[in-house]
Image (cartoon, rainbow over all chains, first blue to last red; front, side, top):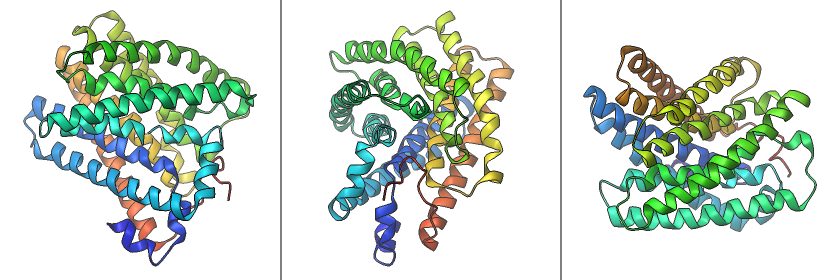
Length: 93
Length: 241
């Protein structure tokens, strides 16, 4: 939500937004798994892992929507990211 | 984008197993097509030795992500798919690591802004450990070898990343360190479950705390940058406009 409300004021964020930001979803998902394991091991609250997992899914949805909008508004920028032999790797996360 | 589709089923599994299965299958197909496409693309045109960056392990890391969640899925064939993608990934990562390490040895050092991406190299071996243990069900010598090699890489590249905030301003590309750190934490927690001595448990607790703090820091910095509209330029290899 924070993305869409800011995009209106600073439209350049969308153009800038690198596809590597999806790395954050990976990081948050794995952190969710780590906290779930910690919940089994140490009797810390299971809720921590679930909240992080929810944040991961929310981030994924926000980023996907933002990236699709970026693709529509700045197709060249997306094309360049995909054509570059290095940054194309970032489509993977 | 694609690995996310493979990891999110793990979060959803306790709540919506059917959606998890479908998403995981979709992610698996996408990762296969993408790894195939990228590897062919790299071989189809001449690459510069300097562009062999740690990011290059991502397509292969992707295939190693398949068994992570796949091992908990129950439907027929899931196990065989996991074995297949583990096979793709585990052999290819050894080949790619050789190329990237030789680049790090023989070419100019990686630019300061791309230094955090070195930590990406830790992830495949954490995943290899988790995948191997999940598939075999035992913590034997190969499992320990993957685990300790991953810790050793973390020691080598982790020390470089600590110096980073001093040398250049925050960039959203720093998020690339979040997954390797989390993956190592998961590996260590899992290792400690079968090797439950105090050293491994302390190590797991330290790694989990550091990872959580780093991700909190990244989260706050990212939200602040978007809020204030002062985001740094993307790293050189993505900047084309």
